[in-house]
Amino acid sequence: MSKKHRAFLKWAGGKYGLSDVIVKMLPKGEHLIEPFVGAGSIFLNTDYKSYTLNDINQDLINLYKILQKQPDAFIKDAKALFTPENNQAEHYYQLRAEFNASNDSYFRSLVFLYMNRHGYNGLCRYNKSGGYNVPFGKYKRPYFPELELNYFAEKAQKATFVCEGYRDTFARVKEGDVIYCDPPYVPLSKTASFTSYAGNGFGLDEQADLANAAEEVCAKLPVSVLISNHDTIWTRKIYEHAFKVKPIKVARTISQKATKRKKVGELLALYKELT
Image (tube, rainbow, N blue to C red; front, side, top):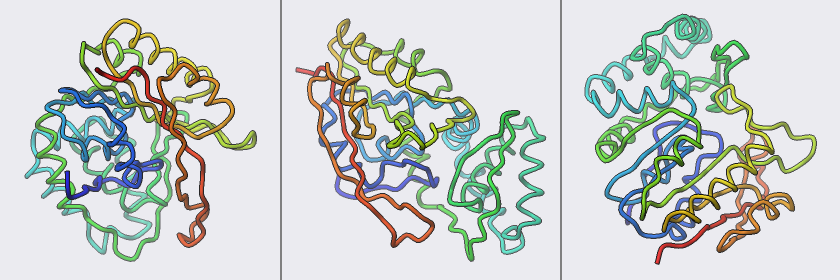
C-alpha cells in the first residue's frame, strides 16, 4: 500500500509510526485478527480480504460499529461538536458528565470522539466505577479528522468488530488466519505502573498468558501470530518459543514537549510463519 493512513483517534501506544515495520513482518493471508485493535493503525495500513477487530473497550467498539453502519450521519453529528464554544473547559466537563450518565451508544460515541480530540494528551482513561475521567486538554483548535473518519468507515466494510477478552478472540481463529497482538506494554521499569486498559488491569500474568495463547493456537492450526511489546529481559523470556524475535528502536515522547524524545527498545515476536 503506497499511502499511509492515520487513525482518526489519538491513542497511547498507537502503531502509525511502526506500521511499516509491522506490516513487513506480518505474513500473507486472507484474514487478519486483532485482539487489541486500539486506534486501528495496522488494520488501516494492511490489505487483507477481511478482518476481525476486537477491543475490551466497549465505547471504542460501539464507535467503530456506528461509523461502519452510519458513516455520513455520524460524521456530520460529530463535526457539530467541534466548535469554539465546545473548546472550553466548562463545556467539556458538561459533555463528559452527560457521557458518563448516558447509556445511549450513539451519543456516547459522538462524545467519545469529541473527548479524544479535546481531552488531555489524547488519553483514554476511566475511574474504578467506569466513569471517563480525562481532564480538558486546552488545545487552541482541536482537529476534526473528517478524512480519517471517512477512510476508516470505508475500510470497516471488510471488518467484524467485537468486544471481548483476548482469549475469546483467539477462540475465533481458523486455519490460515493471521493474528496481530498489540497488548498494553510491559513496563520498562519497576516503578512504572501497569497500563490500566479500559478499566481492566493487564499485568504480568496476562502478558504470559497471551504468549501461551499464541503458542497454543500455532500448535493446533497453520496460523501466524505477531506480538509487539517492550524489549525487556522478561519479554524475551516469555517469547522465547517464538519463531522469530525482532528488536526495534522507537522514538518516544517522554514529556509534554514533543521535542523531548528518546529511543525506546521494542520487539516483535512472530509465532509459526504461514508456509
